[in-house]
Length: 415
Image (cartoon, rainbow, N blue to C red; front, side):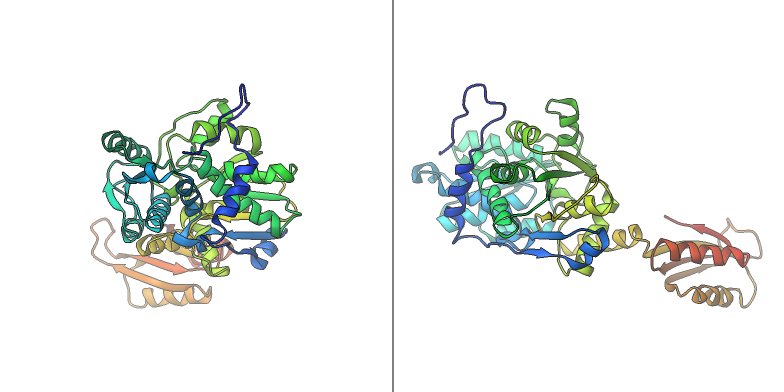
């Protein structure tokens, strides 16, 4: 295995820039050079040039193929004879499985039991053995390491291995070749391999570029590790950004990030959902939760005083249909595009018709209505109506509620 030694007393485990250049040469004919797109809608909305680096369009649907393939291409054939294995929330597993199939070797991928079905099927379609185990990435990784020790298979670490980081760092080279006057790059963080590679690639020739990492607040280990000054493990909650929901990031990546990254910020679930919906609606780009956190941070003011040409890394697009449905609903709610109300009416003819007329006057669209006249919780002579409305934003929501209350209705917003 080709792994460069660290120099004595190095401030962080050295990821040589030369490794990234070599990886770029190695991968050039094997991966997609993904598009760097200037987004006019988001540039106008935020007030600065916003670009998307579309790794959601990469082979296997995420950036992970870069690191996995670079690592395996550097291994001697005898090291691969017993097969390769890894642990993954989905995308890294696809990268390893795809790379293993290219090289004609066996692979096994250990994945959390709650991994979205689309990602499980995608890994299996690339020919890998699937083992579903554990509640999160860290538990799946522990099980994979037990199998590695039993079989002697080669374990492909998703973020701690320098050759994997170097493969991810080729994204930074591609960005600078097209946008040499880059001001800021915003990168998702899970284990930290992606941002470690990109930061190393960019700092080598553009040391003044601002590099921002983004985690989900449901898995904030790197954010709090940097605040405390040492690596921490934090609980992991359920998240749309399952691909970066990791309890404990890497030792090596922590030191590289501490040295090279300007800041790591957190985004909430509703902010991620809204970013996914807006990307789909305004840019026609389908992005998974982990891939949308960079834009979510920019949209919701998590980055202080953004300026200049800014690149959001859309790190992956592997999102299943069921999750899309949930995300669209949450994104509409977060964006003020959906409103659920409970309204109490007098139980007399024409009350429901008048309510519908008053709502129509606000130009809100009734999506669903339930009229309950039999609830024991209601006083005699009263009825309850549950309404789901399509709205045009928070100002419109306020307008709807103000009009109904002004007409004498008892209105309660339902979450």
